[in-house]
Image: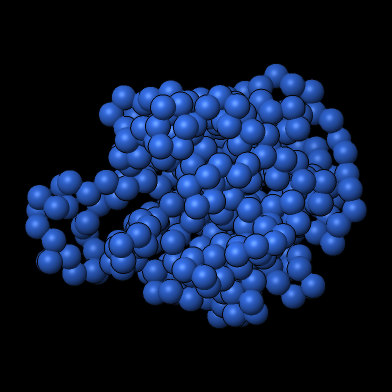
Length: 364
């Protein structure tokens, strides 16, 4: 059985706040508002080879000439974005899911960065089976979220509503992708479960059935938790490599655009309406998309009075936010208006990520 890693940094929490339309009041253990988000860190690799993983392009002598200086710049950039979100909201994320990270080492290095160290983030991470070695993980603030359990959920082909008869048994046995992370605990006494996913990519036109299958795996486990823990509040987040309008999210995750349409076996999908309104968290083949999706179950969308409920945070209308700032965005050239990434046309340009982070706010 794979073992999770938890990291506790013994650092002093410093309270600071800056004004924003998405301002979150309070910062202590009994905070009544909490920021919950997701960020694809775009290939956060260290400079060392992990045995059994195809990480050679991110070595000093690899294709990307991935040196310690470049790695440190990448860490500084990722931490800057997290710190800027805190400045905007007046509070650190209580929960931040991340993807495209290589191992525990890079997570420890990231949460130790001076600009975010005061957040005192702990880590939940499992080494997964992805051949490149990229995993998902979750950061949490231990003064706000009390960890109870976690698991790494592997990708399997059955049982499924999807017909995989075109796949041979050998092909299925050979397939590798990221596990889904599930973390369960309490916030102010209320039970929560957080799923962090990075579903199979679209490279080479692959994944048309694999992403729906990944969503199906998450959904089935979420429904089990709802039966096991009546009233549990569930948040699903990740780089889905699909839009909120795609079948993986609408059919296999039962994602609904309107809160009024959400029943007990559905999820509210706040970024669905935002995609239709023209918001984007990344660009793929020249088109804007929101692959960085967060969904919540009915216990959050239609919360009982006095319990945590999702809040509208953008223009009093939208329940999610795509976080972008000028320093995170190309200001000129061919890619003007798109995320300022680490590499461009094979050259290191010292940017941030090809994804913008997304988040929601819950409050009671």
